[in-house]
Image (cartoon, rainbow, N blue to C red; front, top):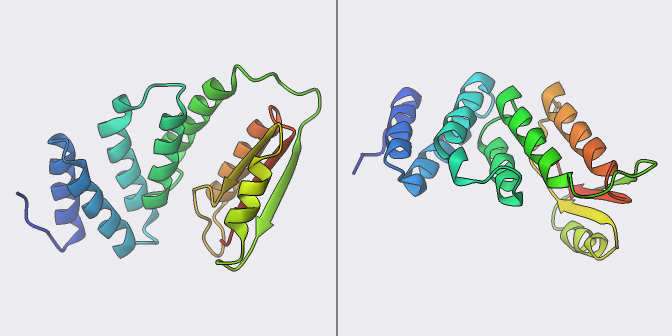
Amino acid sequence: MITSPSEPADMIRAAEAHERQREWVEADRLWNALSFRVPHDRALREQIGETIYRSREAEFPRGSVERSRFLLSLTVVSFPGSLLANAYFENLAIVLANRPRRANPGQVVLGTGSGRCGSSTLSAAFAQIEDCCATHENPPHIYWPPLNEQVRFHLARFHALAERFAIVFDAAHW
């Protein structure tokens, strides 16, 4: 058992050791603690995401929804840098390949709220609409003030989905 370190460099080494041993619950505990400890250290957060991605990406088949979810979950503890963003959009293209491309892009609808305001219910209602892709608080989260990469990620995602769905909906309080 690896002890819980307190310095970022030690936390990284310990988390990487857990990754190598495929002890992902313990690795995740350390990665999460580290990401909360250095929330605005973009380079370090990108390193976290890239390390986890390289360690676990073989567990998620290319072109699967599970791989997309895995990649999005990485952006919560890290940052949507080029490696993660490229991997996500490559996978999304495979996932969407069997859906027909629309002659005209679908409508993008965004819901915002203050939290505990019904946005989950609103997303669930949109999900019942035929030819709609509805999500709730889809990662990556957007900082205040937003960083260009975070906004570009969401815009590219909306664009890709709108090419295949009549309605693309996401609600978030951030």
